[in-house]
Image (cartoon, rainbow, N blue to C red; front, top):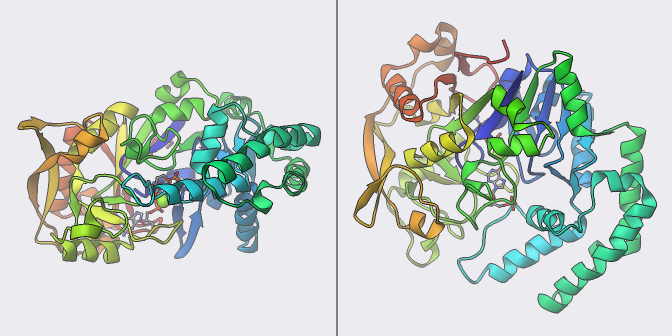
Length: 454
Ligand code: GDP
Ligand code: IMO
Ligand code: MG
């Protein structure tokens, strides 16, 4: 049995905490795409873990796999593993030999390209982790894979081919001087050593084989998506996207299992009860704005509902896990969620952060959009059209601050009536039942209606 966890919005929906929630009943947890651009939070007995590469199931002592769809920065990986060891955990992390390696020049090039775009509205606001340049090299058939680190001659050969191209790109196209990050000898020594550690620790696997043989033995697997549907390179608001497929299709290509395996299991869409976005691009239901990220904000400011945005940002702790940047905040957007539910085929949803909205008199949801005089119910395919959409809001009565711990103990029926009306609306619109309701960051602060693995 497999459960695929997919972000239904723009990332940071609380995927890590849902993986942790279901993780008790799982044997193996697999990340299928992305890299250390992710920041997944797990809160266990008041202790917070922020993970960018290590799969969230590792906190519960489960085997973690970084699938072939991932891009892996060994430096981040090992420092994260070492930090977890210092905190008393024994992370068992396996790496797909087919996964691609992020090298220092990828990070440098990520920064250079963002800088080159910074004077226009083309800047994406990436995490600067080298994600885009690494996937570019994968698609360009010049990438270096985890398997290559195990064979030094191969690593050397590949570096000798690719590094001069990268240096020329940085120096001749962008006019930037290059340093250590583009030095073949230094890179070779450093990455060969990473390969040796991977070999010594028996970390590398043929991921598809490894996972499927465990499933054949009756084990349970969670596929942990990173990022979210609207920053998916195919289904998101291109070009303000990441460079991989966080949607359920990516779970098949990124683990090495068939679409039948993924589709034969459950696909749980993770929904934040409002919206947040880190980086640039449109956000039709945005409240207020963030300088440098909200389009047009720097010239005129958006002003409207600035206080409310600030209130939600502070109460929800909406600052990037990876970069610390303030997240943009908006009302829930139904056309976005309808699109996400269709792309991934949600069999259930988990709705987080309902506690953050408590205490508001009323709240809005973008129910549909107005575009060129027409009402539309799902996201347009182009970002230019999406940017012109005006939301038609549906207003809900707010719910009071309550003792959420008591609600958790008593179960679903103890959830305030107006919160249940909000949940019912989302579930009805998406045609997917609510599996879990998050009312705080902690593992226990969840009302679980369905655990697909139990
Ligand atoms: P992910 O990237 O989808 O795993 O989400 P992040 O960990 O980046 O961001 C979610 C943030 O919200 C983290 O700080 C979580 O601890 C926190 N969080 C998750 N669920 C809830 C919830 O239901 N209520 C509150 N208040 N915080 C939550
Ligand atoms: P998790 O897994 C939120 C955003 C960046 C930027 C765009 C491209 O924690 O939900 P990239 O560095 O991937 O090339 O940046 O995608 N982004 C995220 N936003 N949560 C994430 O991950 C993100 N990973 C990337 O802010 O707008
Ligand atoms: Mg995150």
